[in-house]
Amino acid sequence: MSHEGFKLAQTILEMSNQNATKGEDGTYYPRTSAVSRCPRDMTMHRYGEPWSDPPQGMWGSQFRFDLGYDCEDRVVAALKASGIDVQCEQMAVQATTRGGLKVLGHMDGIVVVPNEYSLGGKWYVMDVKSAGPYMYRRVYDEHVSKPKHEHMKQIGLYAESVIVDSKYPDLKNVKVSDLEVDGYEYGGGLVIYVAIDRPTKGYGDKKIEFPKMHICQFDIDVEEVELYLDVFDQVEESFKNSEVPGIPHPKHESIWGGIRCSPRWCNRYSVCQGDVEPKNPKLKEALHG
Image 1 (cartoon, rainbow, N blue to C red):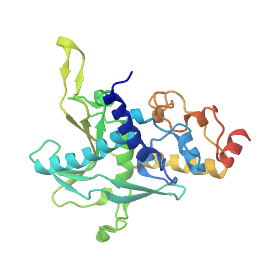
Image 2: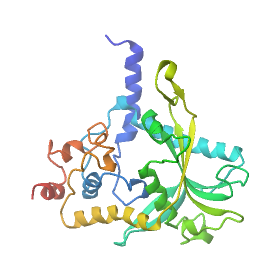
Image 3: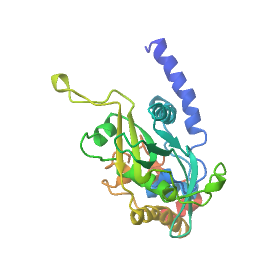
Image 4: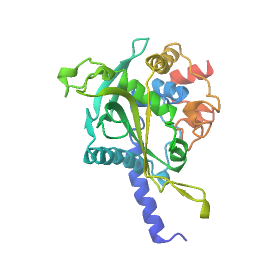
């Protein structure tokens, strides 16, 4: 029989999980953070299809989300305490696709790094990412900056968006990358990774300890950003044509080499795979003709 502490923990997780599932992912709209999302799932969301595979309470999805959210505040506080200026926090920005769709985003901010620091004398479009052991080992490298491509895409969209935040009326419709910071050059993108767990590699005597935080800088290609935005037009075109994109190739970036193509990570997996019938009649017609 399960001990009482185990059962109490399950109760707490289930109660917390209600916050993660009660609204599902809301009404679909093009948003910057979804630029690397699976196009098939995005399109089913566009149809208004509810989740067929909601997250289980034991996974602690709400806790993981909250940890990531809290991490942003702590990193910003640490940057400021280190003498690095952080501006435009959670500023609303908007990109426009080639098809005319408006893509809304809220960037973590821009950081202004003093001249005497590494990467100094420049300002960067910044995003904070809390990382589990697998992701952290993939991005960590003392000698080469290798942020995840999906994070580069997200920050690239922020950089090429215009400012639409009412808190910054003087900056309305100014492109983020065109902002002027006195005495500093524009340096592109900056991803700040924070390891949620103790960051290590290997075992026993060969175990290597990594620093808790890792920062990757990268340049932003304007033409590539235009291509990144195409996914939103593709979703809208599929919806208007009563179509649904095919199941992504196992190596497709959006499903992490197949890892995220499962009910553990995809909330519409059973509908996608045809294991259950869609509840949305328009989606059902699109899938079955």
